[in-house]
Amino acid sequence: MKILKRLTKEFTMLSLILYRVVVYKAPAQNTGKALIAGANANAWQSIQDLTVRNGHAVVKSLEHVIMADNTNKFIAYNNIPPDIPKVKTKSNSKGVLMMNPGVQDEASWIVHTIPGFPKALTGYVFPLAEIQKGHLFICLTIKKSEIDAIAMALRIATPLIYHNDIPDDPARPNLKKLVN
Image 1 (cartoon, rainbow, N blue to C red):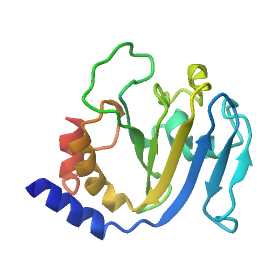
Image 2: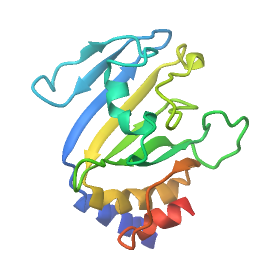
Image 3: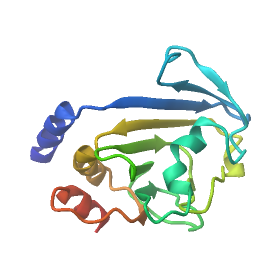
Image 4: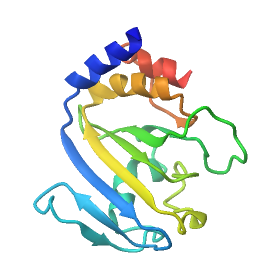
């Protein structure tokens, strides 16, 4: 109960910078709809085939995860990680927590429903087996300084982390506990 009160307090003080994108992919379709922050934030936009490797909101949101670049720092978690068969976990959590290497205090948190996704540092590949299912993808731009509060929530969810290259930092003790 004590950790839940602390978590509630941390998230109450969490100030998101920008709500970036929400993507919905309907069952049995390759295309989807996106609500993207900006001038037309109130209008859902059609997006092209999500199995295509470029040119849509999901690829743009994941650019720091799918490109092989040693300046990209992120944690990827999924209860069904890519290329690891039949893993037992305590969580259904799926997402990515990443630092923006080009901006001083910016990071992103992506939460989604796609098993085996994304493959880290290998280019964009949407799992073809997931086309028959509906999926949701949410990307938030946050302050890098708020990663630890998110890590505290993730510790409660106990996700299976399959990629981590965010460096240790004394200012992020919950992140260190999450990945160890």
